[in-house]
Length: 256
Image 1 (cartoon, rainbow, N blue to C red):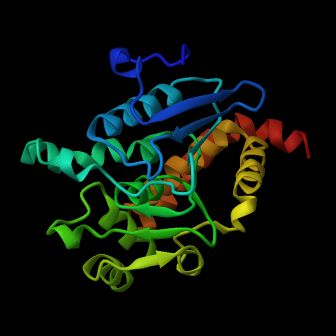
Image 2 (image 1 turned 180 degrees about the vertical axis):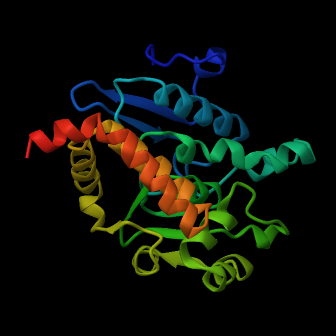
């Protein structure tokens, strides 16, 4: 933890419900949800997760981030009781913390098994890649307590699977299995539960083989295109490729 530096360092001296594991050899870092058995995410934890993602984004040695969990379940969701003590304004800003993986310029992988509900699902949706197994169950069941997904889940999910399927999941509080999530395009890879760790390792190695500059540029471009028109997306793609042309492009081309 000594490598994490952030203006809000005081919040990082005692992490709540998760830990950070560095791998100096592979330029990989793991953020590990560690509040078994269900890895419930507290309000304090949301803020700390945001700060950790920001600190890791600023660390030039880190290339790939993995978000995973201890135990049988990724996360059953947020601390519902803890929501009762915060203001309506704070409620409306919950998505900012949970969107930290999406804002991070580096590739972020979510390794999901077991329950991946509520904010656990929303954190995963904010990542670039999701791996699921036959044990994985996704849900945004806030309708059951008279609420909506409050951390970006509705918007991200609708971008991925369309309005019809999103209504089916949210308005009916439906649970979606790992295989179905893969069929719908929510999940990047579906693997046997026993292979989740090795599949995650394989994806990390694959991502580390590419130019870090090109990876960051691709993530930024694709995120921006998702919020843009087709013509604007094509124009942005051209500008970014132009900037890359005289940097990593020449090195990569000469290595062919």
